[in-house]
Each structure stands twice: as C-alpha cells, then as structure tokens.
Image 1 (cartoon, rainbow, N blue to C red):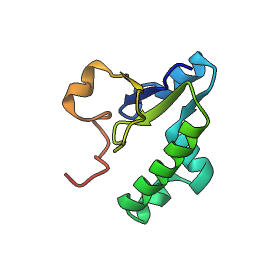
Image 2: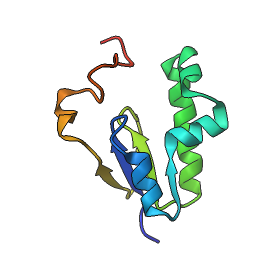
Image 3: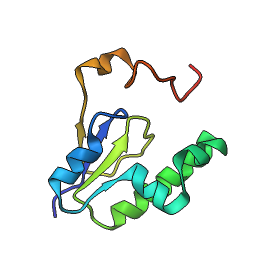
Length: 109
C-alpha cells in the first residue's frame, strides 16, 4: 500500500477542490472535524487547545481508514504520519503570510 499523501495549504488555496478532482479515498480534515464535533468556529470558542485535540483525534481516525490523501490546514500541528508524503498547495501570494488580505488572522499576532 502506498503511503498517505498529506495536502497542506492556507485557507482558500483550493485543497477541497483538488481532493474532489482526485477521487478515491480522499478526506478534508476540517470537514471531518465538523462532521464529528460541529462547526470549527464553535470549537475555537472553547479554545485552540480544544480544537487541536479534536483535530488530532480526527486525524488519527482518518489514518486508521488507510486514506489516499488527507487535506490539512496550514495550522495543523501534527505529528505527521510516519512515511507520509507531504504536498504543499500554495498561491503566489502565500509569501505574504496571509491567505486573504481583507480578513483578520485567526490568532492575535
């Protein structure tokens, strides 16, 4: 069996669209988190630590399903799956450190 491909990138880079085009056993981690726990914005109300615990648990469950590809957000804190291949989906503007110039950062920095 081939190792899982982990697709990373900032919000709005097209990870979900890319997954849809691939077909196969592909998952969007954020979508799976929302299926299991509810809206991500509501998870962050309880704190980033709570969200990261939900993220880690969901990621581990997805890995157990032997997926082809899992799309992760740029904020994913790992650990990555052993032997996984990582593919970074980016836009030319990603060097600016933001996905959308008209939206505030999620953190207070």
